[in-house]
Length: 82
Image 1 (cartoon, helix red, strand yellow):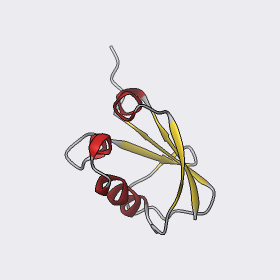
Image 2: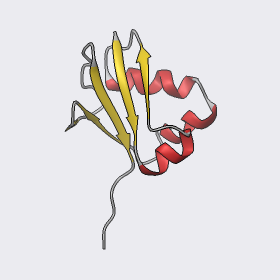
Image 3: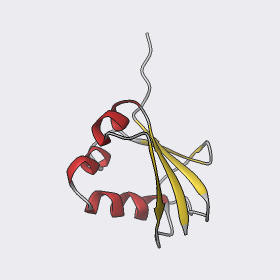
């Protein structure tokens, strides 16, 4: 299936890009995250010990959320305010 991945804030800076298109066989958000982590390098900013939030088609989701073809999956660090 085809997905559009979007990266925000410090994740965008770590990866050096704000988005990418990806074809994957992953069934869930968590499986896709594991696939990205397997690339190593800059993708380690998405590691499980990092605070990373995910939104699927602009709705916050957990890692067990199922992926659908042509979906948009966004990754971002938690927002802090003051």
